[in-house]
Image 1 (cartoon, rainbow, N blue to C red):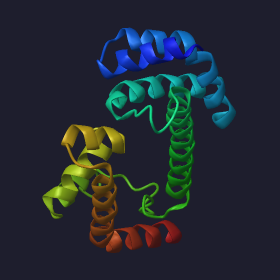
Image 2 (cartoon, one colour):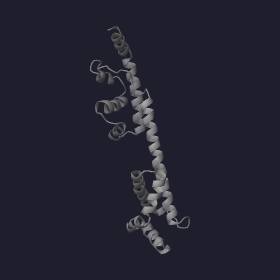
Image 3 (cartoon, helix red, strand yellow):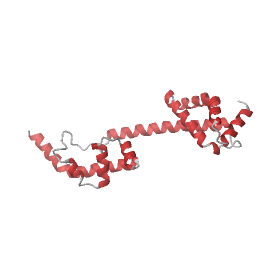
Image 4 (cartoon, rainbow, N blue to C red):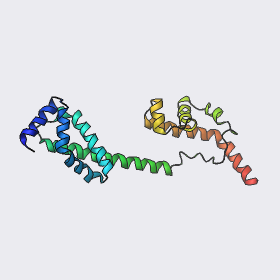
Length: 188
């Protein structure tokens, strides 16, 4: 790419002129896609990374300093870092899913117990409102944890904590009935 064109793009970026993005895309998208693909090794994810990178480039346009790096170097770093962040995010998500699968936090141990027979909703009233609200959203309204977080305007981490504590509180309420049901099941 000519220095003249690069300087023109930089000027447009600093002026927040949208033409800069189309020129960047026209002249750098294939190469930046290659950078993203090399890191993530998946075409669809690389496309997402490319799109996210262009959004970041636009938002950070005023931080680019031609004295510190060439335009391509700056673009390369943003794209590469976005790709790495995408991989880390996917890895964390996978690790969390694995933890949920092996965790006993989400398993009350009451398989086969009919909630209507043990007045689940009535017993929910016995626990703190903040835990009750989360449990109702997740179990009675069928929301995912993320949906409950969005709907209740509570951070996802807080949803997870309240779920864990709420289940622990319910476990205390149901210990005797569960033991009784197990004994009845064993006798019959």
